[in-house]
Length: 570
Image (cartoon, rainbow, N blue to C red; front, side, top):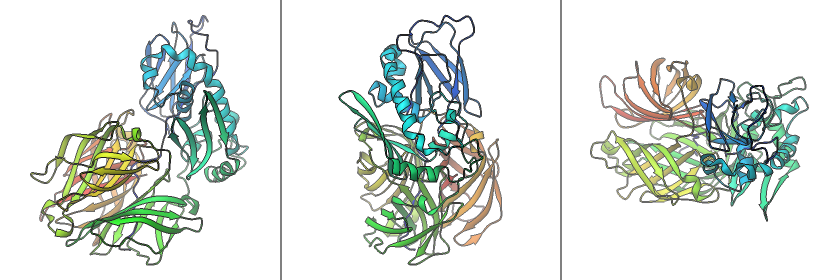
């Protein structure tokens, strides 16, 4: 297992923007004249309820707000406002020209984009005067998408839970359950809706005409996976418990990363592994920072119903455990011998990426090691805010590190290819962008031989609270310097941010339960700690709220402090 693949999701699942609206006509641009109060209600979701605030603007630019409840529901009173309306929650948009149920989710966002012929709806929301022309196309696109996706559902799913635009949606049922298993990929202005790397629906514009096509065979395969736990009497049409995992969830091509920590020779390995229907994985395109040979022998994989991933051949290592995240796009784990202590990360690859997908603001957390020199004086963590422009140039602010004199640096001049693979200057290596475009992982080596593992989590567009942490998280971590260890545990959070860390296993020991208190979560998802976890910590929650990443210097009562990287995944 010395060169085991690694995959870490930071992120989580995924979410291309899709929106839409329906009902009414484009000429309805005067205030509604009814005597009764005029309201627009709906559900804001993406496979889970969105949180925070929903926004609505009318065609004249008047904006109002509504709190989103725990079920994703919102309600706007639009008395004296003029239709049509554009709605927003998180990073998703929707639109309507009638008083109706109008939802906000990835597919409504897609409908608005295709109707407007744009890749981003931000400008339309800022200047909604052009809404009447856009509304003329939305109903057709919405109805076509609903029809194309109809083959996904068992008969137990009612029609209203299939209508992503105007239906009465229930979280983790019907179309909202579908959101947990699909990703939407934009390519040259067109869109595909994919499941496990297979296109189930394409939305194409040619000569100004939008065409929606589906692939019946791929839809049948997707339906079997998405509604695998639905019986004929389940009127909700979905499974609201933790998703079961099967061998089909492993199938596809993954970008793998492995960070190996050794007191004499620390290095990273990366490449691709393609796993077939028999759970056999073939490696390709691998490199290692120490110049060694990446694995070429096919590996056998296995996954249990709770998402635990193991390697069954050729050299199974019982110390290694990996876990698939709930969106099934990322695998993270730890293991290895007392000499070779490893963090493993696998990210499922896709296609249809474009350079502009990197643009935006990110939170960077990373580890860096002195590599083959064995000099641990330069082992440590760093974190910073990073702005990436449309050309891939990066600007770091608020840089912090535990290593005295370390200058701010990170991969720069980033280039993204069609399959989501990232390359950079200054720090030579390779990375990958997740299918939801909100997580990027990169490994590289600097001119001085220092190797680095970098996690970028996209920020903005979503509100966070301590309640988002509630529940059990699988925890993987690596510690450098004084205590060179890998570790894993279960961390259970309550609604106040109090954490119980249990089932702790480290490379050299098993530890008793401990506790911590996460005292702050800003609207940007930034975490800090207090209480029984008395170390300097900085972390962030991913936009899908199923992944958290943080760096910390653990301060033992005796011995050398240990810079560490922690990853929590649901």
